[in-house]
Image (tube, rainbow, N blue to C red; front, side, top):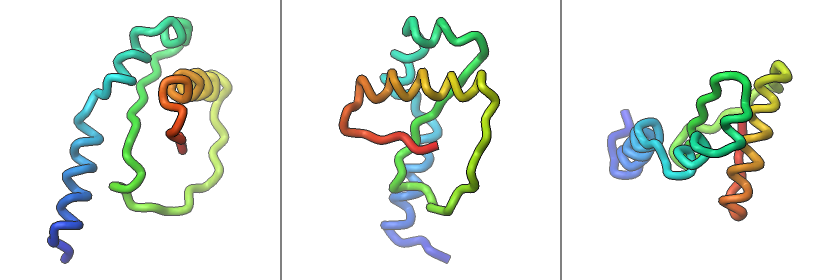
Length: 87
């Protein structure tokens, strides 16, 4: 079992990710871009370094959800030019 400082730091980061409502997400939910989305869409931005990595299979999303993702990506990338989103 891994219980050293590096492991617990990652677990703390994961808990922080899942419990935080970052400012950018709150901004998105109050933006015109979000209000124009016709379905309920909730997003969480997680820190890549805290989570286990694995090869994800290709996803085929319904057009409505794909449009939500593109809307959020455009909003997020405008606010965070140096960051990259992975789905």
